[in-house]
Image (cartoon, rainbow, N blue to C red; front, side, top):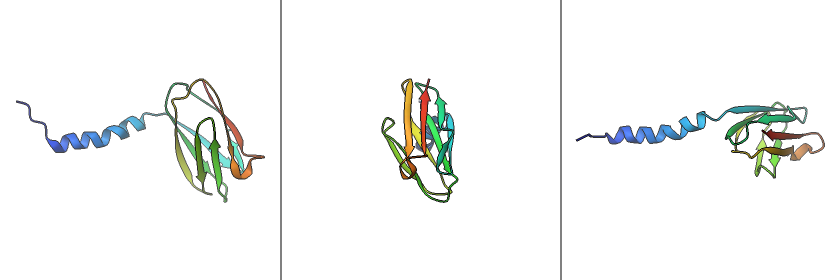
Length: 110
């Protein structure tokens, strides 16, 4: 009879979510001078992604997108990761709530 060690099973269950998460492709956006760079980001449709947002400004900015149902404050000089998807093909606008006149962008899933 095959014996499975409980510690081995627990270790596998702890590592599995991270292995799945690590497989998601990463896409980066910078916040610089109260603008998103790039302002247009193309990502694969039908796949989960990690959006890495780095704020190079000294002040906070917010990544907000109603179509993506995401709202995240990014303090000055910090980086955050936002999990997205899988997205249907289409355009998903986002903006920085603190500088709405200049901090605008769109994610295009294709």
